[in-house]
Length: 412
Image (tube, rainbow, N blue to C red; front, side, top):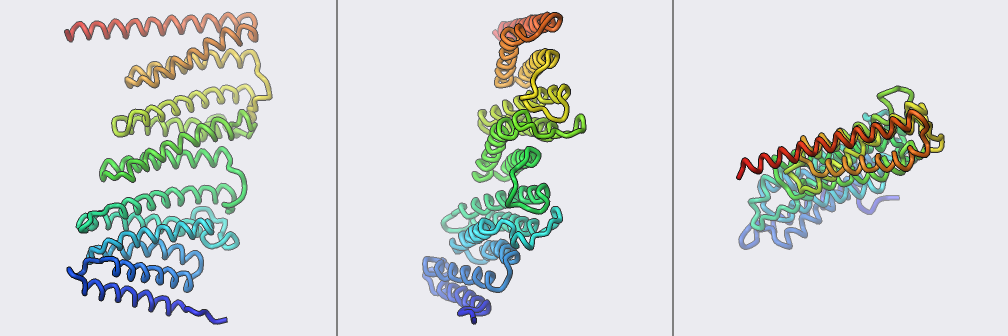
């Protein structure tokens, strides 16, 4: 069967529409204004170009070239100040999003190789990300000269670039961890940990870029990445995929195991982002990240203790021994003191509150659980340790209050 429209026909029609738009623009009063008629002609040219790519190339090349095509109208703003040009670039983002939604493998599952990283996913997602970033940069240089001063296309291109950069890394991770298959198989805790680290890293990168080149997309996008990473941690790390509930293997290596990847590394990343975002983002944002970092440290330490007693598999149904029960009480009190010290040093109220909450939980555990479960020396040690910590905290706070009173008197 013969196609009613060939790639050459689509290319000719696209070129004709572009030439027609230029002819109309020259005839405008004032000339080269780029009004409605010009916008229709150029949009028709863009659609014909996408049709030509679809007909002339396979799935992979069509996706890649459609992303690169976003650069063309952005570059055209160097010579023509038509408001529609930026929106045509945005249309290329929408087109590429549609293609990857239809086929996330870019070239089809049967043609996607199992080679990690260096497969069609890398250019299929990475090249559009680079192209959208370049288009956003170009629009940032030329859009302010437009009569309307419309910066929305640039913001949309920045969002597209950030989205596809994240998709590139996430898809490559899933491909590598599932043996070349990206559309089947449940997410594991190790894989989820990598996604979480990517989200936290994206929040930090977007924040850093926003500090150099302020943008509402970068501002809200950086906070959205942080909120998404917190949601991942709360629902996936703590609840759904927690090896305490799934009894998943935590690995045979003592330190560099699943707990290190899924709890300690995200804790360090979230804590670092909380410090970096402090005074640069709303207070609730940094406080949220600080609390999550503290909870991750608590989870890592607690689960690591259980791993010492239970080995590779730490499922909750394997029971609790007396020494293990006592160790948790001691550990939680120690973490509470560390959080209190960090909260005072960083002048962070949220860390001090987290410390108080954890110590309160430890107190409740000692009186309600340890009293009935522990026997002999361990029960005595549990109460002695609790008393010593509470006395130490009381003296610590007394010192802080005395110092604060002294400073207040000196100020007056």
